[in-house]
Image 1 (cartoon, each protein chain N blue to C red):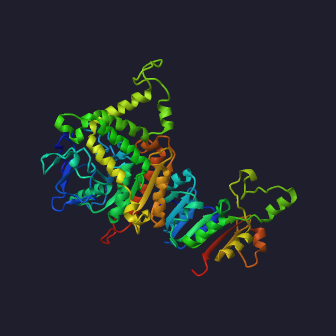
Image 2 (image 1 turned 135 degrees about the horizontal axis):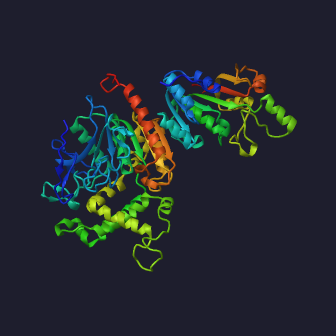
Image 3 (image 1 turned 60 degrees about the vertical axis):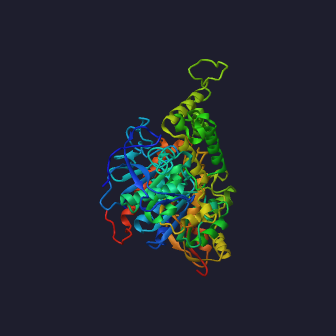
Length: 207
Length: 401
């Protein structure tokens, strides 16, 4: 077994939401850091989908069950409730059809876990207000013309979309700029202003 | 106990003693072929590397491609004298480690390296089968291999691995005998043979049949072999195993042993010379009738058709761990074919890995030195071995490792 190495704080928050021994699909699993952690320390039956062949090769080479595929098209094949958790970390904003993707996550997973950057963070608002240009930050480091993030949203936007898709937010956390996680309250104003990113545990109402 | 005696192949096939083993199967219960014909007391020739462990749990079956054979990792192939076709990755300490796994490979049904096929003696007529040999399918080949495993007392394979037609067999193994396969690795393959691939095969078969030395498949009566036709078939097929980029890189428009073109029909270009050589060396080791039968088996391959037109139904509730691999420049079995398999496996929530390996070696990439392919395959096998050790066996006892 590999030694315990710390993983990114948002990945740790996601991992903490997952019950040991469950079935997990990590959509956009990159080099498999989260999957590897979950397989080793939570004994999950883990699968992944990743677009880049470098990521896929790294994952499969280390023994993870990962397929090369596009989350925009390849989620439709899975049967309903094929997994206990479907994870989408820092990827929703890069999807061509985020609403459809979220709908698929809620269909194929008993729970969906989504982490996302918050475009309403005060620092981004301030830069847009004072400079009048698309903000660039540590969380969103790309210039507008070269960004994979084609569907950015705010915490408030995301919560509204969950309502439209009949999804219940079981847990919500936001990370401030120091990386400290805080509970998302019922009033979103503060979270939407202070959160650099947010993590949601969702499930479809009635499940 | 497994005998290590070589055997002499009867019929008009290879005229010398082949190494490895040969089992006569179907003596008690014949093999019922998809065509409806029954085959009893038929030989299957096979080769093995490594040692079967005490609980017979370390067997890895490798399935060979159209013109491959059971001599996967021999130092010297008994006919060609060249190293076995997968010797680069199968052997002691290698990717498929024969210090750990008992690796076996059987010559397919319909083949010409000692298994029942058109060049073998038909026991009811005591002369070679020729075209009287029954048409076989990929599933028939797999059923014969399962009978071989029964014969060897191996209940369950750790893995079944194959490229091209070998990949078809790996898929068929997982579908027909899911409880007998822990992991399946179909490489550069498809769940059905495409119209284009059937078309290429038909060109090859017609080339054989157009050769006057073919004699309606009874060439042995005339002391002949349809070498010209079979060589043309091989040349055409060989082009499909490469890629435009690879051909360009390897030959370009370079001339063969000359400074300038000579305005004639000699092999002026290097690529012509290369293909002629491929054709010539192929006819020395392969039987023309076998080529007809095996290409036909591939043409008939369509897993979805047997399952109500839904490929996923071939794998419902499968416990098998899959690793599907394709290569970017393979236009014979392009990635879209592998993706179709992956989508079907996703539809039944199977445990599947899938990687498309970047390579310009075309379909042949699975036989060549492809570091990414090898690291992915090694990683998958290592991961599967870990799970194999953790999972209980059928009788409920945990298997220590």
